[in-house]
Amino acid sequence: MKIKRVLKWSFFVILVVLVVWLFIAYWTSTNDYNRYTTIPTNPMKAIVNCEYGVDNLKLQEIGKPTPKDNEVLVRVRAASINPVDGHLLRGALLMRPITGLRKPKNTRFGGDFAGVVEAVGKNVTTFKPGDEVFGGKRGAVADYICVPADRAAVLKPANVTFEQAGSVAIAGLTALQGLRDKGHIQAGQKILINGASGGVGTFAVQIAKAFGADVTGVCSTRNVDLVKSLGADRVIDYTKEDFTKTDQRYDIIYDLVGNHSFSERRNILKPNGICVLAGMGGAGLHPESWGRLFANFSAAFRSNFTPQKFVTYIAKLTKDDLNVLRDLMEAGKVAPVIDRTYKLDQTQAAVRYLEEGHAHGKVVIVME
Ligand SMILES: NC(=O)c1ccc[n+]([C@@H]2O[C@H](COP(=O)([O-])OP(=O)(O)OC[C@H]3O[C@@H](n4cnc5c(N)ncnc54)[C@H](OP(=O)(O)O)[C@@H]3O)[C@@H](O)[C@H]2O)c1
Image (cartoon, rainbow, N blue to C red; front, side, top):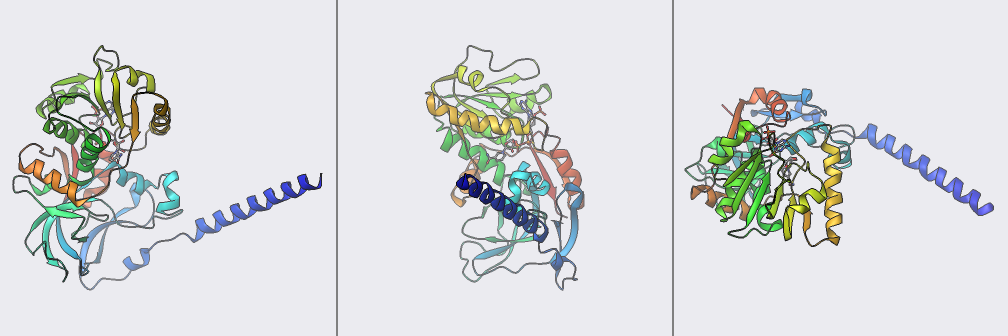
């Protein structure tokens, strides 16, 4: 009886402490918005978000950065937007313990860029002023950014524009790492790409073809020609046909949508096939997004007990893989597809468009 009472009170005290801690943590969570209230001596324009929400994306004059010893200063010419930028901006509930409980800890916006090296830190030997580069760095939607020379930037191939190169890092790496490292893609394999017309899908179709695979792309009617033009051997229009109702068997399903059940996808995989669970549909938070996210984790767990494997992953920024993408572009095997471009002061509109979830190719911000 006494032990029961002690346990009850201990639980109650822990609960109260947790609630108080959460309350204090929430209200004391802040960010560096103060640094934007003073007029910078060497100003540049950047998009910042000091509060969560698309309405709080602001064009701001902030101080132009100076490269550290291992960094390069890049004059950004183009920067693209990805679904993750919208999640960080919105402060998705599950991400808030990391991104900031009440306000975003990191107030800079964007992830991919292409531009021209303006200055290099004293230890940098791989780049020089004037080099055209592309890569990935948080805060890329700005006139200038400083980037670690050894991991976040590589030379831009001459045969792609700044707009195209600025759209590569996150989407291209996601497609490359998903197909190569998670799907273990081989020449001659049959691959189905669900969500073939979006930012990642348009890279995935071209990369899969570059690996010598036989590619079936799934998209809606208006994107059929686009996906064919990227090299897909077959295109399934999801408004007319359910890709799981078929006798076809695939070695890999590269799934950017997650709108079919575990067993429906298993039925169209070969006995040792792999379903790479890359996403949950077009950018933005939609009514079906949470269900698809949980279904992805559930499918990955359930496939521990089946010969076909379902795998989730998060793409990583690596210089080696940026160079792989660079080589594919230089060889003419991958050409980034641009849906729309926006000016820096139209970034809110760009995010809203992307988050409708129906971009065909990439949405890019172009600096003047
Ligand atoms: N794992 C990672 O590291 C990682 C990295 C980047 C992105 N992602 C995820 O991957 C997903 C795709 O990213 P993204 O950048 O490609 O997004 P996106 O550019 O917004 O994708 C839009 C595309 O999705 C297509 N789509 C929407 N519903 C579809 C359906 N039912 N069937 C087939 N296609 C459909 C749309 O085609 P229609 O207009 O024809 O419907 C549109 O072309 C997102 O969920 C994102 O969060 C994951």
